[in-house]
Image (tube, rainbow, N blue to C red):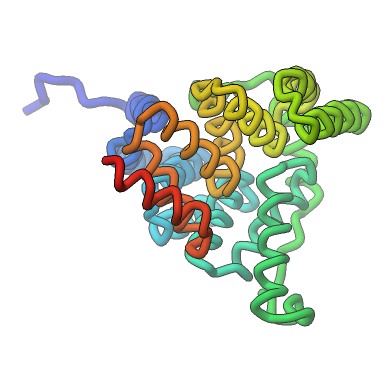
Amino acid sequence: MPHKRRSQSWTELKKAGNECFKTGQYGEAACLYSQAIKEVEKSGKNSEDLSILYSNRAASYLKDGNCGECVKDCTVSLDLVPFGLKPLLRRGAAYEALERYRLAYVDYKTALQIDCHIPAAQDGTNRMTKCLTEVDGHSWREKLPPIPIVPMAVKENFSQATCQTTQHNGTREKYKSVPGEDVIKKALCLKEEGNALVKKAEYKKAIEKYTQSLKHNPSEITTYTNRALCYLSVKMYKEAVRDCEEALQLDSANIKALYRQAQAHKELKDYKACVEDLNSLLKVEPQNTAAQNLLLKVQNKK
């Protein structure tokens, strides 16, 4: 007998999952993506749809700290559509949280072959280089697994896709177009002017410079975290949280963004959110003493 209530299509389930993800309901989002995956597999839809769903579920797992499942889903997503940028970055972040630094380095480095302007991949590569040098010494590169060579066709397809005015998952797209070299230089110049003002404790003027910089290059993580520091200094805590959220969308394991967001949440007396931020940070960097100390202070206030 047919169901009286119409079952949801995979696109509706995906959309509902995206909405849950946006509001921080990561467990519910993962469940909805799982249902959507089943529907797609039943209907025999193309591999691209499945790849996106696995990548989205991986993002939910990553946000929930379930890094093992995140790695599995990203791997499936990449098997379906090789060299997908989002699953590469998400798997890199998950490997990093699991302290599998060589594998994380390979994923970040592969992502940089596709687009060398992505801050999450640049920052991730730099962090892994530092970690691997500490662990394996100067010969750390010899111990790496092979780094895949990204085919030229993949790079060209990505370059074309980034120039299209598309919108994904209802969120503002950060990579709609890769900024040109001149634009990046202008953004960097404005950021450096902001940094100089911070050194003089002229935080409001620095905020203006960082805001101008972000208009030229809205994908620069450090500009968001620097402006968040200024917002904290002038007691604009909600704005600080918003900037940290922007930075964490680009790199979910960014230490400065997590710490400054925790500081802002503490000042807003949102101690639960503050503890969540610090726990996320300590998963990435367990020996971070500033985070450990702030966590002790906040736990005493609860």
